[in-house]
Amino acid sequence: MKPLSILFLGTQMAVGGAQKVLLDQAGWFHARGHRVTAAFFYDRDSLREKWQAEFPFPILCLSGFHKGRGILQNGFSILGGLARLWILLRRERFDVVETFTHDSNTLALPLAWVAGVPVRIASHHGIVAGIRPWREKIHAWLVNRGAAQRIVAVSALTRRKLLEEGIAAEKIIVIPNGIAPVEVEGVDKTEVRKKAGIGADDPFLLAVGRLVPSKAHRVLIDAMPLVLERFPSAKAGVCGNGPLRGELEEQIRTLGLEDSVRLLGHSEHVAQFLASADVFVMPSLWEGLPIALLEAMSAGLPVAATRVEGVEEVVEEGRHGFLAPPGDKDALAEALLRLLQDPAARRRMGEAAREKVLEKYTAERMCRAYLSLMERIQSKRPEG
Image (tube, rainbow, N blue to C red; front, side, top):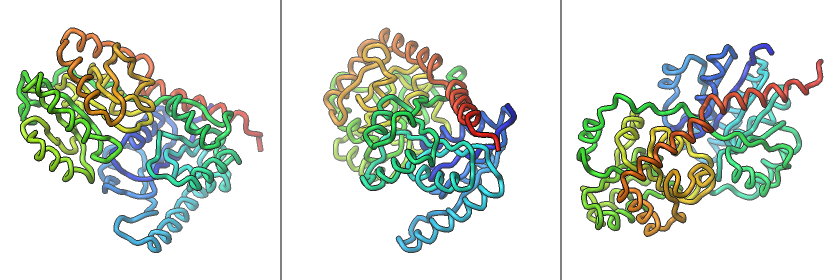
């Protein structure tokens, strides 16, 4: 089959799991000779220039939204973004459009359908916080009516949610997220810890994610006093920025945890922290199939996480780590303590975690599944 012309379309340029999957897919397809374009409706974190310098394919911002503008102004911005998308679709004549969020599914796929793009794939990466039922109904109606030939769920539980939303079962295919495994060899762990204010022998608990309510870092902070009763030198570090930073800093001060909890901010070197940690912590209230979790497991870290969508599909209790109910600080502390008190089991679980990711959750495996889906859809298209 000849190389494809593919548009990968997301909602916002930001540091996040869906964006990483989009860029990893685009890079994989580009490296194999396909003509790739990545586009986003808006550049939330001013990343376009940085990403364009990093990646060898075009990265476009459709300027369909602007922070700080009112509803009316952004209404016109959305219309302008859709107009720019329409021009792009008509000019480039893509073979495939793949969208990565509820919003990009709903906004872009009808235009791609009308523009005659032969292969249209939507995707769903997990719960969308605060989405209104009427938006879910519109989304389901568009997919069922043919705006997308298929919608990809990144986990079995995500598939279940799509069914609950009203999307027909025959429209849904499960393709788990995949990653490039994190390489930990050669990292100077002592130096990484020193820069973060963590001692060489301190038990190091690492969380990675935006400082937003769904990631529930407050639960990890609340769990730390219980951990410190047994392991006084334990340190928790959180890689990521977000709107809750001030609240979390206040929580840390209130609990007197300034020496035990580090908000590490955004880092371009998360892999170094993963290589230097003892346990990966994910206290989220919900997830899809989290990239941060897969990367941590690929780095050989055992996991203390919450029993939520996607996570419990990957983490087998007692084999790769321990799971706790969402929002339960006592149960999360217990999971952390079980890992900290048994170094041999911790190493064994970390090795098993890495093996599982290498077997089932690589970017290579994910992208080949998407390519197969694209080719199957294209082969069923009538010749014209």
